[in-house]
Amino acid sequence: MSARPNAPLVPTAWATIGPFFPQTFFRDGDNDLTRLAPEAPQTALGRPIWLTGHVLQEGGGPCVNAVLEAWQADAAGRFRHPRDPDWQKADPGFFGWGRAWTDAEGRFAFRSIIPGGYRDASGPRAPHINLAIIGSGIMGRLATCVFLPDFAEANAADPVLSSLPEALRPLLVARADGQGPDGAPRFSLDLLLRGDAAAETPFFED
Image (cartoon, rainbow, N blue to C red; front, side, top):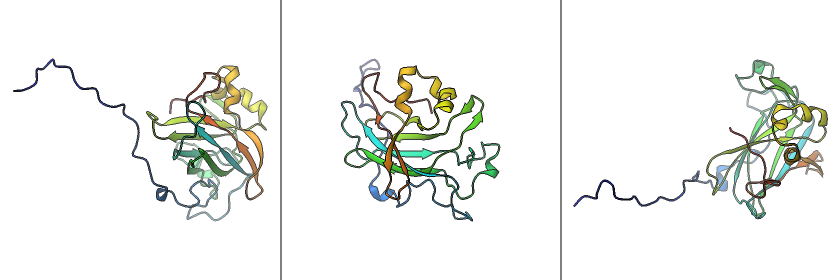
Protein backbone atom coordinates (compact mmCIF):
# COMPACT_ATOMS: atom_id res chain seq x y z
CA MET A 1 0.00 0.00 0.00
CA SER A 2 1.49 3.39 -1.01
CA ALA A 3 2.10 6.16 1.51
CA ARG A 4 -0.52 8.90 1.77
CA PRO A 5 0.44 11.96 -0.35
CA ASN A 6 0.15 14.28 2.64
CA ALA A 7 2.03 12.08 5.08
CA PRO A 8 4.77 14.00 6.93
CA LEU A 9 8.26 13.42 5.62
CA VAL A 10 11.15 12.23 7.76
CA PRO A 11 13.52 15.16 8.35
CA THR A 12 16.93 14.78 6.76
CA ALA A 13 20.19 15.74 8.39
CA TRP A 14 21.63 19.23 7.94
CA ALA A 15 23.51 19.45 4.67
CA THR A 16 27.14 20.39 5.12
CA ILE A 17 29.80 20.76 2.50
CA GLY A 18 32.15 17.88 1.84
CA PRO A 19 33.63 15.37 1.42
CA PHE A 20 36.75 16.41 3.26
CA PHE A 21 40.18 15.70 2.05
CA PRO A 22 43.05 13.61 3.36
CA GLN A 23 46.36 15.37 3.78
CA THR A 24 47.60 13.57 0.66
CA PHE A 25 45.27 15.92 -1.25
CA PHE A 26 47.73 18.72 -0.47
CA ARG A 27 51.15 19.02 -2.02
CA ASP A 28 54.19 20.56 -0.39
CA GLY A 29 54.29 24.24 -1.27
CA ASP A 30 50.55 24.59 -1.94
CA ASN A 31 50.46 27.24 0.81
CA ASP A 32 53.12 29.36 -0.91
CA LEU A 33 51.55 32.09 -3.07
CA THR A 34 55.00 33.05 -4.34
CA ARG A 35 55.69 29.71 -5.97
CA LEU A 36 56.46 30.02 -9.64
CA ALA A 37 54.15 29.13 -12.47
CA PRO A 38 55.89 26.78 -14.94
CA GLU A 39 56.38 29.60 -17.44
CA ALA A 40 57.63 32.16 -14.89
CA PRO A 41 61.02 33.66 -15.82
CA GLN A 42 61.68 35.20 -12.41
CA THR A 43 60.93 35.08 -8.71
CA ALA A 44 58.06 37.07 -7.24
CA LEU A 45 58.55 40.79 -6.77
CA GLY A 46 57.68 42.37 -3.44
CA ARG A 47 58.37 41.94 0.25
CA PRO A 48 57.91 38.33 1.47
CA ILE A 49 55.62 37.74 4.45
CA TRP A 50 53.87 34.93 6.29
CA LEU A 51 50.18 34.94 7.19
CA THR A 52 49.35 32.57 10.04
CA GLY A 53 46.54 32.02 12.50
CA HIS A 54 43.97 29.59 13.84
CA VAL A 55 40.50 28.62 12.67
CA LEU A 56 38.36 28.30 15.79
CA GLN A 57 34.92 26.90 16.52
CA GLU A 58 32.39 28.34 18.92
CA GLY A 59 33.92 28.30 22.38
CA GLY A 60 37.44 28.65 21.00
CA GLY A 61 38.16 25.01 20.15
CA PRO A 62 40.21 24.27 17.03
CA CYS A 63 38.58 23.60 13.69
CA VAL A 64 40.68 20.62 12.56
CA ASN A 65 41.41 19.81 8.91
CA ALA A 66 39.63 22.87 7.57
CA VAL A 67 40.70 23.86 4.07
CA LEU A 68 41.70 27.48 3.41
CA GLU A 69 42.34 29.11 0.06
CA ALA A 70 44.13 32.45 -0.23
CA TRP A 71 44.38 34.74 -3.23
CA GLN A 72 45.61 38.28 -3.64
CA ALA A 73 47.04 40.93 -5.94
CA ASP A 74 50.75 41.09 -6.69
CA ALA A 75 53.01 43.82 -5.31
CA ALA A 76 51.71 46.28 -7.92
CA GLY A 77 48.05 45.57 -7.18
CA ARG A 78 47.37 43.32 -10.19
CA PHE A 79 45.76 39.88 -10.34
CA ARG A 80 46.76 37.14 -12.74
CA HIS A 81 43.17 36.72 -13.86
CA PRO A 82 41.37 37.93 -17.01
CA ARG A 83 38.82 39.85 -14.93
CA ASP A 84 41.62 42.27 -14.03
CA PRO A 85 41.92 44.77 -16.94
CA ASP A 86 45.70 44.83 -16.41
CA TRP A 87 46.14 41.11 -15.82
CA GLN A 88 48.66 40.79 -18.65
CA LYS A 89 50.91 43.20 -16.74
CA ALA A 90 50.73 41.11 -13.56
CA ASP A 91 54.00 39.86 -12.07
CA PRO A 92 54.84 36.66 -14.02
CA GLY A 93 56.81 35.39 -11.03
CA PHE A 94 53.91 35.60 -8.56
CA PHE A 95 51.36 32.80 -8.51
CA GLY A 96 48.87 34.66 -6.32
CA TRP A 97 46.87 31.69 -5.04
CA GLY A 98 47.49 29.05 -2.40
CA ARG A 99 45.81 26.36 -0.32
CA ALA A 100 46.44 25.32 3.28
CA TRP A 101 44.71 23.21 5.91
CA THR A 102 44.52 23.38 9.66
CA ASP A 103 46.36 21.03 11.98
CA ALA A 104 45.17 19.49 15.24
CA GLU A 105 45.36 22.90 16.94
CA GLY A 106 43.51 24.69 14.14
CA ARG A 107 46.67 26.42 12.87
CA PHE A 108 47.32 27.43 9.27
CA ALA A 109 50.13 29.25 7.45
CA PHE A 110 50.59 30.93 4.07
CA ARG A 111 53.77 32.33 2.58
CA SER A 112 53.21 35.34 0.33
CA ILE A 113 54.23 38.95 -0.32
CA ILE A 114 52.72 42.24 0.80
CA PRO A 115 50.01 42.87 -1.81
CA GLY A 116 49.60 46.16 -3.59
CA GLY A 117 46.47 48.26 -3.32
CA TYR A 118 44.27 48.87 -6.35
CA ARG A 119 41.01 50.47 -7.39
CA ASP A 120 37.89 48.57 -8.45
CA ALA A 121 34.23 49.43 -8.97
CA SER A 122 33.71 49.85 -5.23
CA GLY A 123 36.58 52.30 -4.78
CA PRO A 124 40.22 52.25 -3.61
CA ARG A 125 41.08 48.89 -2.07
CA ALA A 126 43.68 48.64 0.67
CA PRO A 127 46.31 45.91 0.45
CA HIS A 128 44.61 42.70 1.59
CA ILE A 129 44.58 38.93 1.25
CA ASN A 130 41.33 37.14 0.42
CA LEU A 131 40.55 33.95 2.32
CA ALA A 132 37.96 31.23 1.79
CA ILE A 133 37.30 28.46 4.31
CA ILE A 134 35.51 25.13 4.08
CA GLY A 135 35.30 22.61 6.88
CA SER A 136 33.20 20.12 8.78
CA GLY A 137 29.99 21.69 10.07
CA ILE A 138 30.22 24.72 7.77
CA MET A 139 27.11 25.02 5.63
CA GLY A 140 28.91 26.65 2.72
CA ARG A 141 32.18 28.30 1.76
CA LEU A 142 33.04 31.26 3.98
CA ALA A 143 34.90 34.23 2.53
CA THR A 144 36.66 37.12 4.23
CA CYS A 145 39.56 39.56 3.79
CA VAL A 146 42.68 40.02 5.88
CA PHE A 147 44.15 43.52 6.07
CA LEU A 148 47.62 44.50 7.24
CA PRO A 149 48.41 46.87 10.13
CA ASP A 150 50.96 48.98 8.24
CA PHE A 151 48.28 50.56 6.01
CA ALA A 152 46.05 52.38 8.48
CA GLU A 153 45.12 55.21 6.09
CA ALA A 154 44.30 52.85 3.21
CA ASN A 155 42.40 50.53 5.56
CA ALA A 156 40.25 53.44 6.75
CA ALA A 157 39.28 54.22 3.14
CA ASP A 158 38.71 50.62 2.03
CA PRO A 159 35.01 50.19 1.09
CA VAL A 160 34.83 46.57 2.24
CA LEU A 161 36.41 47.15 5.64
CA SER A 162 34.41 50.37 6.03
CA SER A 163 31.17 48.47 5.44
CA LEU A 164 31.58 46.87 8.88
CA PRO A 165 30.64 48.54 12.15
CA GLU A 166 33.73 50.34 13.43
CA ALA A 167 34.05 48.05 16.45
CA LEU A 168 34.35 44.96 14.20
CA ARG A 169 36.97 46.28 11.78
CA PRO A 170 39.96 45.29 13.96
CA LEU A 171 38.81 41.66 13.66
CA LEU A 172 40.06 41.68 10.05
CA VAL A 173 43.38 43.44 10.63
CA ALA A 174 46.25 41.04 11.23
CA ARG A 175 48.82 41.78 13.92
CA ALA A 176 52.59 41.77 13.47
CA ASP A 177 53.84 38.56 15.05
CA GLY A 178 57.60 38.26 14.72
CA GLN A 179 59.23 36.33 11.91
CA GLY A 180 58.47 33.23 9.89
CA PRO A 181 60.86 30.29 9.46
CA ASP A 182 62.75 32.07 6.67
CA GLY A 183 63.05 35.36 8.58
CA ALA A 184 60.26 37.11 6.65
CA PRO A 185 57.82 39.19 8.74
CA ARG A 186 54.88 37.20 10.08
CA PHE A 187 51.34 38.49 10.51
CA SER A 188 48.68 36.59 12.44
CA LEU A 189 44.90 36.57 12.51
CA ASP A 190 42.62 34.07 14.20
CA LEU A 191 39.29 33.27 12.54
CA LEU A 192 36.35 32.54 14.84
CA LEU A 193 33.64 30.79 12.85
CA ARG A 194 30.90 31.36 15.39
CA GLY A 195 30.72 33.14 18.71
CA ASP A 196 29.85 36.35 20.45
CA ALA A 197 28.92 39.07 17.96
CA ALA A 198 31.82 41.21 19.18
CA ALA A 199 34.36 38.44 18.52
CA GLU A 200 33.02 36.41 15.58
CA THR A 201 34.98 36.95 12.36
CA PRO A 202 33.03 38.93 9.76
CA PHE A 203 32.41 36.98 6.57
CA PHE A 204 31.17 38.32 3.26
CA GLU A 205 29.01 37.04 0.43
CA ASP A 206 31.32 35.26 -1.95
